[in-house]
Amino acid sequence: MQPDYPVSFAVEYPDRPLNRLTTAFRIFTAIPILIVIASLSGGYARWGGPSWEAGFSGSGVLFLPVLLMLVFRQKYPNWWYDWNLQLVRFSSRFGVYLALMEDRYPSTDEPQSVRVEFPYPGAPANVNRWLPLVKWFLAIPHYIVLLFLYLAAIVIVVLAWFAILFTGRYPRGMFEFVEGVFRWHVRVAGYALLLVTDRYPPFRLSP
Image (tube, rainbow, N blue to C red; front, side, top):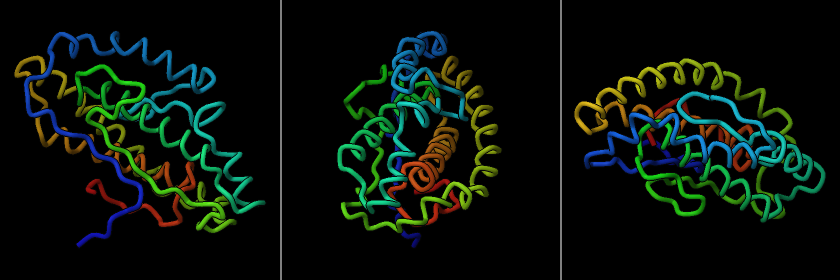
């Protein structure tokens, strides 16, 4: 049995015909919600594999303030945690939509088919106060692996695009692979950027 990692990510498989029209023009239908995400992240957004990674700097995900608070006060303010959690959930819904895994337009507050959870470190925080200074460095092996996984996921999404146009279905094997890359990405973000756990992320796509 593999132990559960505290940062979890899952997408409900759409066991139904997907909308072929919105799938065909997904890159265009996603533009309005992309503008919303870019505004939340201070105008910063970039392609980060199968998901649109936005908000990890500027006014997006709170990283540096949390790091300083953990080091000097050993505290993770509750509302900072709530902000990070909801922003990651929102950006994940957008990434899943862009990756064709969901044909419902991303909601700004409803979970829809995407589930993202990570623990509240507490105040005083139950995470090491000094480890956040080096987590970004310790996660380098994951960055390297994720780079190749992102490239593979992009190819899979393109193939899935054709599959949906011809069959209306997202092949389950392709779906689970892209979901696994999302999961890996969110786990690394939870460890190195969100700073919600000291447990090193596993090298696996599965839950």
